[in-house]
Image (cartoon, rainbow, N blue to C red; front, top):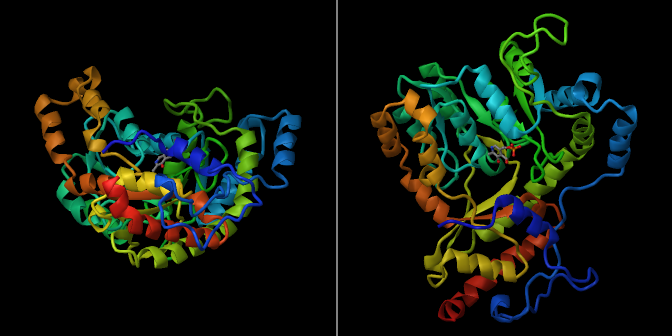
Length: 443
Ligand SMILES: Cc1ncc(COP(=O)(O)O)c(C=O)c1O
């Protein structure tokens, strides 16, 4: 089932919420059992916390950059400072800031030498950028089906997807939880394939108390507007590997390097640099990240305890090794059979009417017409035979992911930043929709 609401538009709507007087009571214990979507009173009539949070010092930090006249990182200090701070916070050896998460992934794939004729293992349950960067290198994205319970790449299926052309495993820590890194790193080690972590949604998440993004050869972050650490648009690559990080640093700066000259080029490159304005904002936002992450975690755990009591609602399970979830998204699966066969779009509509913004999440990427068109494009046909492309289509079928895309429901991270009463309201709204489902299904 396709969804017309993009994640970014959905976030904007979630932040604005129902516009009502702040003085009105947010929560009514005597809320009518009649569903709001059928004209009853909504469980919640207040917006969830808005995002991004603007701190006291953000404006000054921004103005300081403006007045310094050093707006570009090559003449400034903020991006350098941020890179040091972010690497330090993660326990990574090095960090290169980039213009976006997509830029970080593209730069990292370039450093790994991924190109035409190569295969990259990716999950199908991710934002399109994860596969766009593979296609931009004229390599083939090979999907490893999803584990529906955790919504992550099913690491038990990686081995079967490997061929002699596999050059990279690209797991995504979707929603801020962590993919099964024990299995992924083990397969990668035995087969000698580098792991590039897409950590764009998993700031400060942990696998066995090590930060996500520092477990593979490199980790890529996004600081795009919806992300838990945000400067509008931005990204970063972290790694302990000095050689790889130096290639990334050079590539993202037009291939400069080698000699101490603005016109000394070590390789073909690109401009994927972050500006000083973004660096300054990130330094300010970073000061709040740990506390916000703790609030999200506490609220999410509290919400999970309530939601898992409701038959038909299954919060995404975390692998035992995931010692910290960043909760960029709060994700659960909806089983309409427990809700009087109410289709998911009706469930989402009813929940929104109760004052709880939600979305149905991703669509199956393997079925995207643009993917087929790209694989059939002139450049790809130069590189791959028709047989190879047809076989890829077969290999890329992901039946578990198809089901997941029909079952998933998401709340955005900002909804986890308010007081605990908000979690009670979310759970009450779900229980109310469940109670009212037979009437709604008949309406
Ligand atoms: C999983 C994932 N990968 C990659 C990206 C790309 O990041 P950006 O939007 O900063 O380019 C995003 C964010 O949108 C993402 O969620």
